[in-house]
Image 1 (spheres, rainbow, N blue to C red):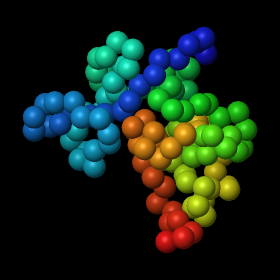
Image 2: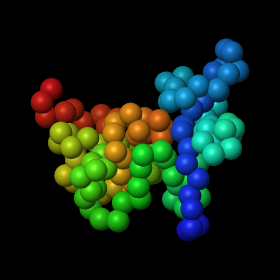
Image 3: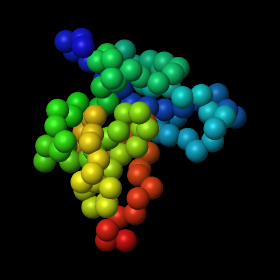
Image 4: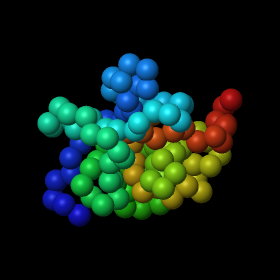
Length: 120
């Protein structure tokens, strides 16, 4: 891993306007990308978190089965799915990355788990 990972926000190129948009699109025709927060430029593709060169804003790499209290949201790198503490799937999820807030996970290009929340 590199000593300092670059911070980013995920996004996509809108197929109609060709403009970059922060977030995740449901349209399969969009081109994924990410915004380099340091250089303030868009890059096409998916950032290499596992390789140690990129890290989402407000996130840390997981070092254990549990995320620390200040980064409670568990993220799975292969699927790009995040799990909230109030979901049934949370306890059995072994994270590769932990997020400080749900919006941080979404800005990183992760999608919510399809498992329902316990309070729902």
